[in-house]
Image 1: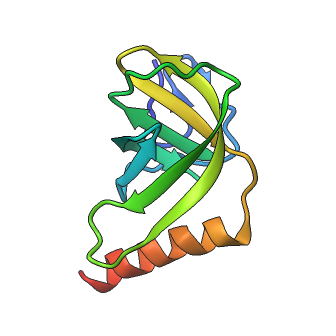
Image 2: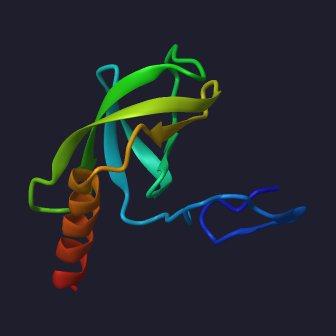
Length: 117
């Protein structure tokens, strides 16, 4: 059993992830014209819940990502690769390249989130 939100441990041993998965902030992701919410994310990619589309592992796609709970308009178009699909449940996406623009997007989302507290 994998813990997607609580660090690097599995029941069967340590995960081999390069980037820690985070549950917050939640992002809205538009894929193939449908809006989904992230279950968790990392600097390497996103896990999206409720996916019921036709994509398969290895597909290259463009997504629109937006911080769900921000009043500011933080959105971006990002190229990703489909890593895994669990039909009717989830889709795992990996960023093609971690550009300075993507880092800036995440930093702006965090800065806005903590400024409002």
